[in-house]
Image (tube, rainbow, N blue to C red; front, side, top):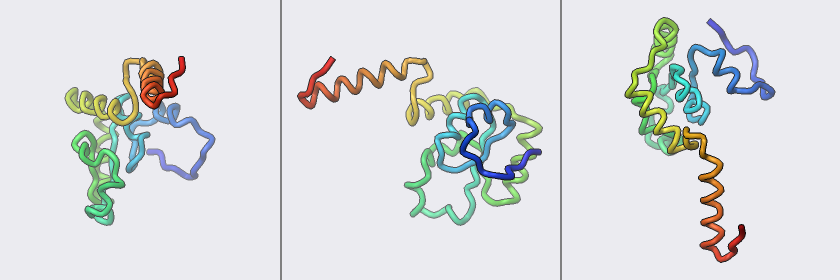
Length: 132
């Protein structure tokens, strides 16, 4: 089992995903990136944040059914051990994860740049500052 010993900003998170067996986190798009490549995702949804006043800060809160949710430290440990032995993600869950990724991040079809360029051109044209 690997434990984080330090926080570093010079590491490419995508290369870490490729070396990881499981990803744990809360309210970060990195979870969606790891999710679409098929990694088990565990979200620690502990008692302190199980309050409606935090719901708006918990991105993709309405899609927690697509991830493993730990309600406390004991459940987190249990889920980590379970996922180390079984990393399989159901096909329906993967479909939901891909749709969630596309709604929050970008298309998985590789055409994101073209879509963003078209959207920017549309907004500029609608504002009266048309440019090509």
